[in-house]
Length: 57
Image (tube, rainbow, N blue to C red; front, side, top):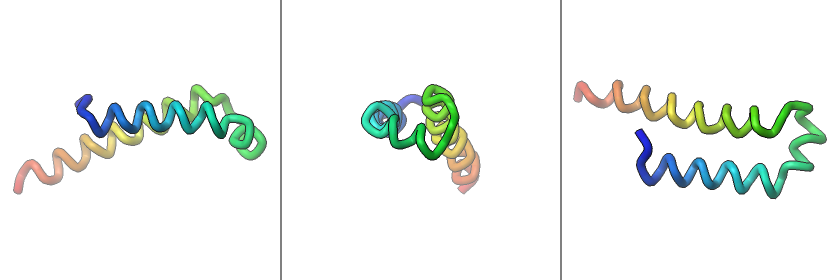
């Protein structure tokens, strides 16, 4: 499942959290590692869903 798009989201979400971490912590009182994991797991689950949906076509 790790192709170029997944790697770009991984690096993009990590850099976005690094840059906007302080602003994010003001509005969402959760751990930034948890946000990082949730973003990347949602991308992986979305890819699995779309792969299964369009596999039958």
